[in-house]
Length: 312
Ligand code: SER
Image 1: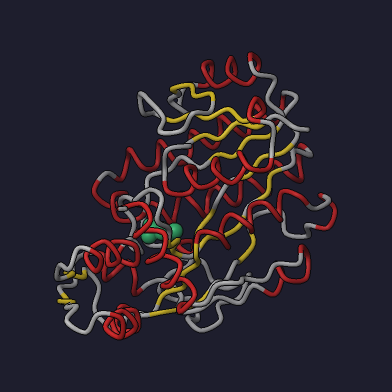
Image 2: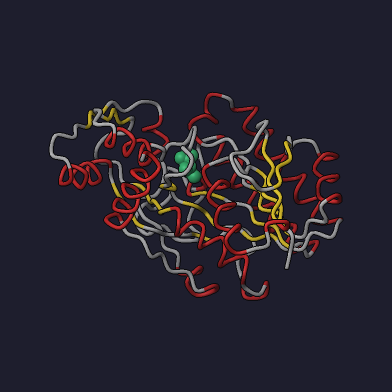
């Protein structure tokens, strides 16, 4: 059994990944870390600034870590408010993990990339793995640069880094923060509170999304396959389903007909407009058997069921 470290364990992805791994592994083999003082989990937790190489190195040595899941990052919308901080955190925390993995006993690294690596000149429908990448957000630039470095370390140094390009993640455990796709989570909270939802994107903005269980399963799957089946050494396109705010509004109105959504696009509209409508993930299907299980309807049912349980 490998011992793992999650960096960014208190975030949207990290909180759900730790819950998933807890069911699968010996709890002593899961170490959580984040910049926050405390964790909401009962697993071993160490406060960590991922920009501090020495602290990260000590943590890895003290706990004899085998695999690192490096999930800490500033997302697209917040990244535009704090460009230099975003570049610094997203790139230098990745370099810390890559350099540790290169020189030490780390066996595998998982690092998420994003649909934000694409840009305005990318064909929008069924965007191909190798399509044009001209990101126009600091977040997207950091993810694309990160992908190139992951490939570089994989090939030059034989480090084992695995990655997927996540679409917007829809989840119920922890709210996302600072992303352009966050509306797809926020809307459920307004719906369940019987409040009007003010959407920051226009109603026809089509974006690729994925339900959290599929997102976690993709991490589990890509980390579980043999390294030599992974032909792509940077990051894999990953598809769930695609939707617009209007599509989710219509489905939610079928459940509660007086639910109201008001559309007031802000600066995030420009970011969303630069991203693909839908993703072609044939390389993931072929190389590591990826197939999403959740469509929009199934995602809505699960979100409502889980959020109602949390609020009981
Ligand atoms: N969900 C991310 C964001 O909106 C995209 O990867 O920033």
